Image (cartoon, rainbow, N blue to C red):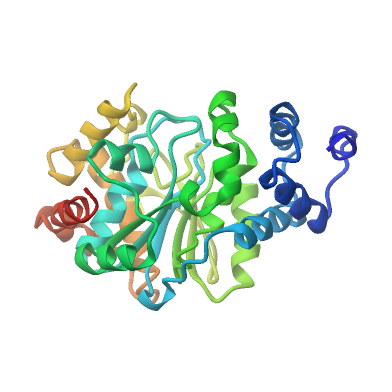
Length: 331
């Protein structure tokens, strides 16, 4: 590791093989925590290259528990995190709206590392016990149209670095990895990224795959569609900047997206969304993300019709019922 760190400190980049090897060595406990922390923070100062991202991804997929659920043709809705916005659980709420609209969701998530509440936090708060067994996960998906893969259960390297990430409390390249290594192998993905460079890197990687995907970034820094301003979309169709007004929605206030100062507060906000008793800003932000996820199933449909599907799922209570069925399956 000393040689690797010295190389990085002099602004050199790792090859794909080197990046893969370092992560494999982390998984085998070959480095101490100080070395790992130093390694993770280097990429905050100079950014990550495509070769490095690809090597890290290879290592995580090589060591993860194999769990192919691609037969369901499901979508994952996930942001990288690390945008320092401390929003409520937008992608998790959007996932249940999508499930309620009739589209299967296989969400890959974790505890929060840089915010108050990650997907794992809010689901666990509601009584969810994370599942490992493929048959259990399939049963949950079939009953609720949603299943959840808690990343440390399937990625030993992520489990290894979780305490260090939490202690650091800042974004690391592991934020970038979660959306790329869902062990359920969903065929569709809505990915939120915290900056445009990451959007372009993701776009390049996914263009080489058969996945149907949409990568989104709000230009004021959110790793999802925040509706606080314009956002950019990347897909196989190209790149596009979209304004809330094009969706027929008003601009959201940043304070309305705040996730609170505790998991309990974040969970309360999450509940108001699924109960459809939240503010219009929260509701519209969730619906916009859900609409773009639905669009991965219906790429020829206009986004307005997808937005209407998402709205019906929430208003009719189907999103909430999917959530209740999920909790019933995993409690």
